[in-house]
Length: 444
Image (tube, rainbow, N blue to C red; front, side, top):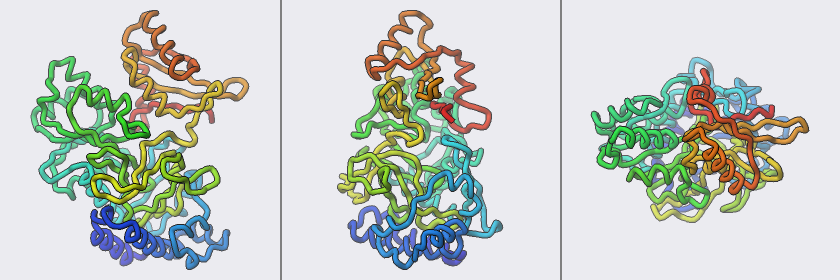
């Protein structure tokens, strides 16, 4: 894709617009096949990494004529992107406008370079996402997240809201007192925030006698944490918010590498796929596509990306998908909340556990004010779990209740260490971090 080809792809994205998600499955497949063939030609011409991959595996790109044919191409993982970051770049350095990076949750951060066309695509992605989540030009969004530190999501939300024509209040993360002062003064209709921080907003309002249900906020776009179970019912975090605050919650799932989001509609039945921007596969351990409702690793092929497009890239996230049409009218695949990350799976005393399930239990406990979960290897190489906890009260009774609850729910007993608010702040927000850390993996 030369610069001119990139403009053509962007024009195609606008032509299909948000209506692609309402088309027949045959129409959507045809759109994706056409864009896939354009991508393969582009990668074969401009990508050092994929040119080598095609050559090494003797792949003739002209043999890839359907989505099913994608299985002939090996998958790519985060390790390759970390070790050979520059080899994924398809444009000259003077075409790069923005450098974003991953958060480094599962290893060293990866840089993603974006061109002007990529930034336009990113704005379209979030524009479509906010529309899906009930957004309109009449809304005013308060952004409770960072817009610096190479954080793609913050930039993407800002660009998408601008394209939507809605108002924006860039307040940044944290400081509940400032968030509420701004809400009461500027009267935004929606917030974009991490769900656990929304819980802190509720707590602050309760402690300071703010009637949250008389505020201007009507909805929240929730990022970074699950608010639903895999059956789409609200999990403990989602319930904590909605039981106190009568607002509509919209869940979203995305990653920096895919430069695309899966966002819920008002039905709350999973994040909608944007098929003009991404080909989605959910793969088992043998790289075979799983069926609807079965867990598989989210594997993506980006469409319309100019700077660093990805082909069959395994994200490490485990989700389910559902392919029946949604009541909102969209016919696209919907993704469940993230069940867990492949590399974060814990085998603890015979029990398989993913951090999100553990977080749900801790969020449900009134005796736990805040927490960080840590996993490490013991002297014989087995997983051990240590919970750093701020208890509601430092009493033996509270300790007994916390331990008994975890034993009953998990059938195993993790180690518990009670910490101060200051120590918790340092664990959750390391100097280089840009979002709260809930899970520390020390297994090497």
